[in-house]
Length: 78
Image 1 (tube, rainbow, N blue to C red):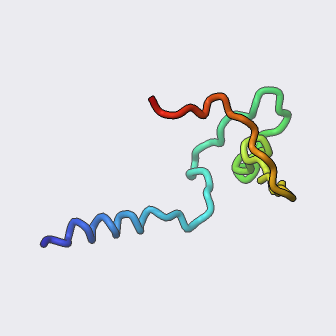
Image 2 (cartoon, rainbow, N blue to C red):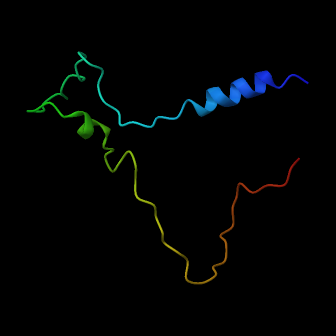
């Protein structure tokens, strides 16, 4: 069959990857400073996520088997 459309889609998808660091466009200004901030944050500071936006992973492991509690919403299908 015609494989050209598949090849074009694969090349377009491969070209979507960003290889360089993000930077503001020449001549464009950064977003306005947050309300109450004394200084304008830099582009790198704006890209850093706060802990609430990207919480740490919880690695709490169970040390022994535990009985499951009765689930009142675990009903058989009607």
